[in-house]
Amino acid sequence: MATPSQFLKFVDDNADRFIKRLGEAVAIPSVSGDGKYRPEVFRMSAWLDGQLQSLGVTTKLVDLGKHVMDDQELPLPPAILGRIGDDPKKKTVLIYGHYDVQPAQKSDGWDTEPFTLVVDEKTGKLIGRGSTDDKGPILGWLNVLEAHKTLGLELPVNLRFCFEGMEENGSEGLDDLIKTEVTKGKESWFDGVDCVCISDNYWLNSRTPCLTYGLRGLVYFKLTISGPARDLHSGVFGRMVHEPMTDLITIMGKLVTPDGTILVPGVEDMVPSAQDDEIAIYEKLDYSVKDVEDAVGAPITLSQDKVSVIMGRMRLPSLSLHGIEGAFYGPGAKTVIPASVSGKFSIRIVPPQTPEAIEPLVKKYVEQEFAKLNSKNKLKIENLHDGRPWLADHRHWNYEAAIRATEAVYKRSPDLTREGGSIPVTLTFAESLGVNVLLLPMGRGDDGAHSTNEKIDRSNFIEGSKLLGTYLYEVGAIKA
Ligand SMILES: NCC(=O)N[C@@H](Cc1c[nH]cn1)C(=O)O
Ligand SMILES: [Zn+2]
Ligand SMILES: [Zn+2]
Figure (tube, rainbow, N blue to C red):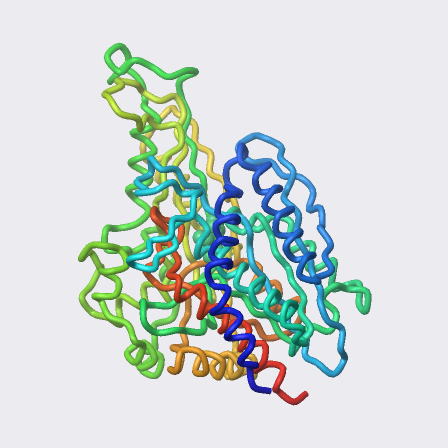
């Protein structure tokens, strides 16, 4: 089943309008990790639901209940389930994406307002929070739907959608929804799904498209040290009392070495060394130390050896220190001893590691190290959320279809990659539905997801929309 040329032409002809629609989506600050934006996450769900319905998709908004975040009870944003097409002769593809985004403020170092999509005509960059993670890819699917509706073209497959608004904050409620839904048999929204496609990660570099068959899992910790009943004057109480921040920094400094080695006993040992055949895969990838330097904007890789750098992202665990809540951070020279501080850190985990195996190791180690300080302060360590790592069979027809689609659109074969990030629901789909899951990224490695000046290139958004549509045609062409 060849991709109709009218579809490809429609995407080109409507590129400016599609970018305008991306601007509308970016303008809704649907930050899931900050309670004050929760109404905006709901507004985003309503916007997306409206778009899907206007494009002929039947939708159902599923209430996922409530949760507590930073001591505040909040309603969870709904999961949007969608369906279009019920032809038993066609394959059924389930599309997943997330409509929430990471926090962003201009003062973080953005050159432009994060929630205003800026189209840089010179570089072709579309800059704004969510442009690549994950509003651009979600809108790519809308572009495919719109082209087919407007042109009166039949979709080559039946489509099911599952869009969530909590991915950047642990996907709360979604696993339960999926597990409950599959128990409904024929009545299930996911009944008859043949494969899953997720567009929510990035090429390794800025030239070569890729398909991704692995993700790291994650365990996210909050480590709180509290002591005095209130913030103190350091001139009055400094060197008289145990200071929470001093304790916290001491412990955080014992989690990981500057070369990335995780110091929590047992964590590194769980991962088997790479064999020669696996190393050969990493050697062949179109990826260089220079690509990493370009993406991060500085020559700071942990090694000059390409394979060891790429293994750090694809097949080794990593521990990152993210921030300290409650610490003084503003301009000026406030001489405060903060009363309570919470260090945030996470460990990206790889097979065979699981959150259940990692969490007790971390808690035990942190408690032991705290005990060594002989501090009279109090320690609390919590797992804020977690997700297991995932690996798929990339020899499956789902991947073959995506390879053919990539070759058709980009005129080159994609790299096959494992990704360092985490999308916890991927494994839930694979296990609960028992089908193959494919990650088909739209953006480039230098898009700056989660960072300042996040962008997607115009060409990735437009060619990426063609790729998503062409992939559906390739799946549609596969005989049962
Ligand atoms: N595009 C996927 C992504 O960015 N996933 C997040 C998931 C997450 C978990 N906790 C906070 N965010 C990631 O950081 O990998
Ligand atoms: Zn994402
Ligand atoms: Zn993300």
